[in-house]
Each structure stands twice: as structure tokens, then as C-alpha cells.
Image (cartoon, rainbow, N blue to C red):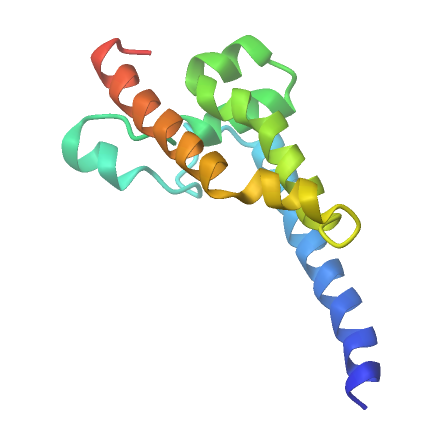
Length: 131
């Protein structure tokens, strides 16, 4: 019974997740997050007036989906630069059983600490330099 349940549950969850992603992509492509209250605003920016590492990511996503690469970089350059890295992480996760060494290298402590350092550095630089 458990095997049958997994055979049904996993595809159903996958379809549901892909459906949610598709809806979000359409929403982000059609509606500019800067103009609609539907999209959440950054609490950190609202309270401090400073930009967090993710500030501008929603607007950058909207710009990317509308093929406005320069605008996307202007909104959040780290977000745009991180997309290929995120694609590698998703691939590593999906193929973890086939390529366990690749998965281990992409999710190991050195990668995690490097990503952490890049995010903190971006957070500081964007507030000091205004980027």
C-alpha cells in the first residue's frame, strides 16, 4: 500500500508545485511588483531604510521575465548573478543519486560559507555604495 501511495503522491505533489510555480511566473511577468500591493514589501527596508540582500529581487524577476536584463541587474545584481548558481544547485539536487560527489561538492561547507560571505558582502556594499 505504501508503494502505491508514493506512486500517486509524488507525481501529485510535483504537479501541484509546478502549477504554483507557473502561476507565480505569470504573475511576476504580467504585474510589476513595484506597482501592486499583491506583492510583499521588504520589512527590513521599511523599518531601517536600508536594503537587505534580497531587496529588488521581485522587480528583478519581473524585469527578467520581460527580457529587460539591464533593469534586472539594476534592481538586484546579486539575484541575477546567482541564477546560474541556483540552476547548478537544482541540478545537483535532482541528480544527487547519480552524481553524489557533485552533489556533495555543491552543498558542502566551503560552498555554504562562500555563499554566506558573498551575501553579507553584497549587503554591506549595496548600502555603502548605493548599488
